[in-house]
Length: 460
Figure 1 (tube, one colour):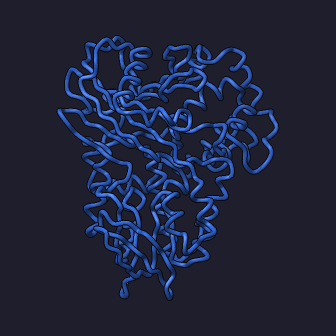
Figure 2 (figure 1 turned 90 degrees about the vertical axis):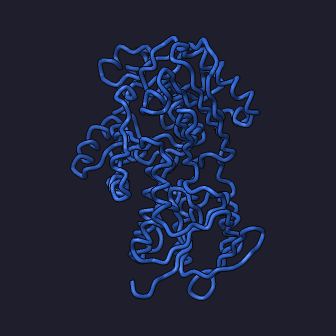
Figure 3 (figure 1 turned 180 degrees about the vertical axis):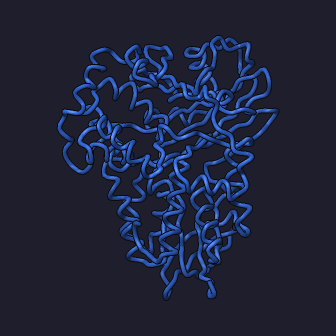
């Protein structure tokens, strides 16, 4: 590119870092602004005393070639590690006991997780009428297609583990578009899963339930640190306070060390959370501020807790466990970090990463750290069987954790398409747009950069 276009990337989370990385590769003059002193957003890894703690995402799924190629480009192939096979086994709490999720037809028939009535109910699914309307709460969708037991003991805990959310509020179409598409395209989840698998194979796509889980030897921050090194100096501790159109570009007001100044750019890529976008766009697009400010981000506390192996009464032979709301427990679930990946705890120790709060119990997430530790320890003792006290604990509270794709959220997603068309040069990427996972955030950035390169406003 002979005449370099200038681009401001606001936010140095995973989407912002990816967008900046790819734009720089294409020859754009990129400046990244980050409010905090940390690149990577919610991806934070700490190491202390032989313990390795991921305080945000602990892994991601290899669902796209884009993500796979990016990891390779960054030279991280030798540091990439796949989850232990034991992590394929996952548990759900029922009646206070950990019960394995059935992973085959035979184990499904034998499991006590679901009653025979619930299992027989599945036989009706291919013959049920489709749900009505363009949007429906996930709870209503699942109750109609699979029955109440599958909602309570499969979908509810899954949603708590992924979104820290409530299936009664979340949108099937926006939050679980592939599930929604199975019914829309095939009239049945079961029929769609079978036929869709053949089509994905032809397209060389990998479904999330079959994609390999991976991280890095030194934790997930390895990924974002590598991206940050490739980007010219990031302006840390710098807040984006205002955004205005000016000529054919934009004027960005920033604040650093208590001083405000304005900078002009040809384009702006916004990669901050929806609630921060609402404030940023108050002057440029005031009609969008109300809906964006209403996007809920419930609090979640991540509690990493390590014990002497001899103090654990059961074998940690899986990924961990999730807890259905009907069980009335005080945490959302816990993953067995030292089982999933090596190097998460020193020899003779095991590590748990537990999650507290979400839309189910937001007040629990905001408890003082001492109370949080006691709450999690009590649940682990009751559900896993622990006789000793933790030898190491680390707690991170995310006061605004994960955007909730509630019923009606497709209207929120449409706002970004509309703004990109209405204000050429203004772009958006992040976990509020196409999905909340690390992989989805990477793809959101990639799609945005593709639109910039091709000069296509709005959705690809």
